[in-house]
Amino acid sequence: MQLNGNKLIHFVLSGVLLFGCAPGNVPAKSAKSDTLKDNISDFRPKYPVTASARPATAARPGTGDAAAAGVPSGDITGKLNVILDSIAIRNRSIRFAQGYRVLIYSGTSREEATKARNRSYARFPDIIPHYDYAQPNHRVKVGDFVDRLEAQRVYAGLIAEFPNALIVPDRIEIR
Image (cartoon, rainbow, N blue to C red):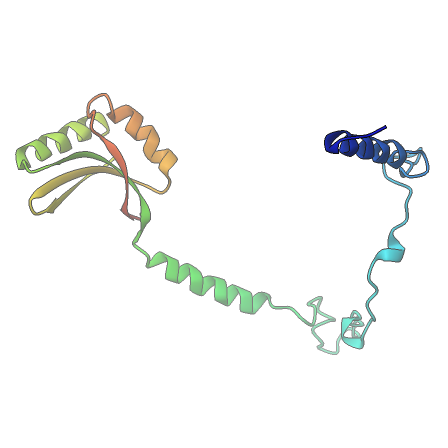
């Protein structure tokens, strides 16, 4: 009997599957739960316990020790709070971030740009239109969106009135 390459591979794989699933090769489940009975603690790495890794013993009350007050000896809460406060102060000073806006007009006519800005403000009064002029182009962009999904929602409302609208990445104001 002669086997070609594909038949040989199928033959070998079927043999592995049949003998690999024999009752002695599959771990049995306990009757109490769905966990396996195999004990793998022998395979876990073992680390020596040093004096610094042992928990500190509590001091006697009234000695003024930090452990007696209930504060662990390696407590970093104070240092962490100082760092978090400095990050919060720095974040408050950030005024701009990278985000998205909907570009509703881009052209050379200032009058058309003003009309587009007024129409967008009438359609969405809670979203501020932004007017940019970079010679010779006037651009009107709507909104300050952190992610593209937010911009997509407004874009869906504006596309009927502004068929050439685009979602563009832009520097947005953080409020």
